[in-house]
Amino acid sequence: MAETKNQQGFVFSGKKRSSTGQDGGDDFIVANKKSMLSTGLPSIWEDPAASLASARHEFGEHGGVNMSIEASATFTVMEPETMRRMFSGELGPDRDFFIYSRHFNPTVLNLGRQMAALEGTEAAYCTASGMSAISSVLLQLCSSGGHVVASRTLYGGTHALLTHFLPRACNITTTFVDINDHEMVKNAVVEGQTKVLYFESMSNPTLTVANIPDLSRIAHDKGVKVVVDNTFAPMVLSPARLGADVVVHSISKFISGGADIIAGAVCGPANLVNSMMDLQHGALMLLGPTMNAKVAFELSERIPHLALRMKEHCHRAMVYATKMKKLGLKVIYPGLEEHPQHELLKSMANKEYGFGGLLCIDMETEEKANRLMNHLQNCTQFGFMAVSLGYYETLMSCSGNSTSSELNDEEQALAGISPGLVRMSVGFVGTLAQKWSQFEKAFSRLQDSELYKN
Image 1: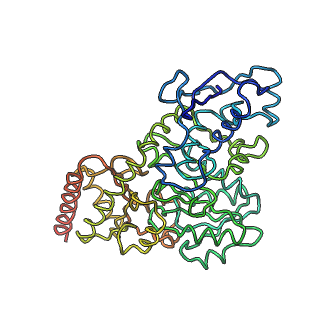
Image 2: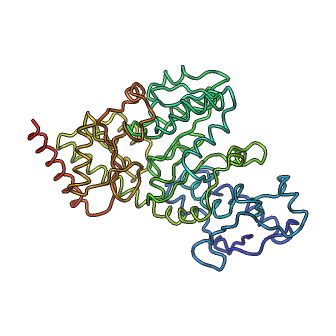
Image 3: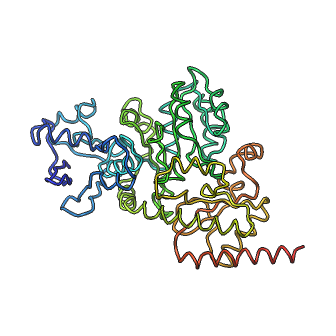
C-alpha cells in the first residue's frame, strides 16, 4: 500500500504506487524515504515521550485510528519489470515497494519508527527476540578474527553468546572488563582488531550504571563502535543521546509490559540498519530473525503508554527500596544515595522518569533468598517467582541460579552476583499501601521463622 499525507501530516493508505514513480511526485518519495527507515525527526533531542508523540501516526487502510496489519508474507507488483528492479535494490520500502516480509514489512517498519523515536536514533529494525537483535548486531559489526570488549556483568544469555558461541562458530573473541574501570576498558582494546565495546546501561542483575558518555569517548577515540543494551532502562536513559552508536532492546520486557510477547530491536544509524538488511551481506536479512506483523501491531499499541508505565514502575521501586532499607535489608537500587552510581545516573537520566523499575535485595545465601521469595509469593501474594521483567505484577528471581546461571561461580563473583541476590522487577498493580503491607507481612514471617529455626 502506498501512503498519502493530509495537510496535518497524518498518513493514510492509498493504492499501490507504480514503479514508474509518476503517481505522487518527488514530494511523495522524499516524505516516504524519510519516514520508512528513519523517524524524520529533528536531530535535537527531546523527551522520549515527546519524541514518540512527534513521530508519524499510521492510520488504517479505511481511516481507522489504528494502523492496519499487513499480514502478507509476500507482495505483488503491478508491472513485470518491477520485480527485477526491487531485487537489484533500485526500488525498496523507502518508495513503498516490498518483496517479502523476512526483508521488510510495513507493519514491522512502523514499529521500527516508534523504536527509533523512543531512542532518538535515525532508524530501528524490530526482531523476533532480544537475543536475535544482539547476535545480529555483533555479527554485522564483527567479522571472523574480530574482537569485542564487554562488561563482565551481562545477562547470562549474552554472556554465553560472547563466551562460548561466537568464539566457536565465528572466531570472534571477547575480553570481559569491569565497565567502571575505564583504564581496564582502554587497555582491553586491541588496535585494529576490537570492533565493539558492549555493555548494558544498567547491568543485569547488579544494577551497575555505566558511564555512557565517557565509555563512548574512550571507544570512539580508538575507532570502536559502542553497543548498549537498554532493556532495563527505556525512557530513563537514552544511550544514543549520550554517545552510543547502537542501542539494543529486548522489547519483551518493559516495552511490551504484558509478559506475553518475545521481541527485540536494533536502534542506530540508518546506514547500519540498511546494511543489516542488505540482500547479500545483511545479518538480519540472511539470518532471518523476522518479527511477525501481528506482534508488531500489538507492540505498537503499547508504546504510547510506556512513559506512564515506566514512571509508576520507577516510583514504586524507589518507595520500596527506601522502605526495605529501613527494615534492615541490604538493598541495591540506583535511586538510593549510597548507590555507587547514584549521582552518575542523575546526571544522565531523562528528567521525571526516576531511577529504574528494578531493585535487588541481597539475602547473602540462596537458601535465605528462596525463603523470602516463597513467603512473598505463597503467603502474602506480593509477587511471582518468575524470570523476566517489566510486567505489571512484581517478578522475583534469584539471579545466580536463574538468569545468570550461564556464568560459572568465578564469573558470578567477578560480576558481583551474590548467591542470595534477589532481583525484583517492581510491578504497579494494586495500591502502593496494599502491596507494601504484603511485603511487610512476608518479611515478618521470614523473621519469625528465622527465630524459631535458631
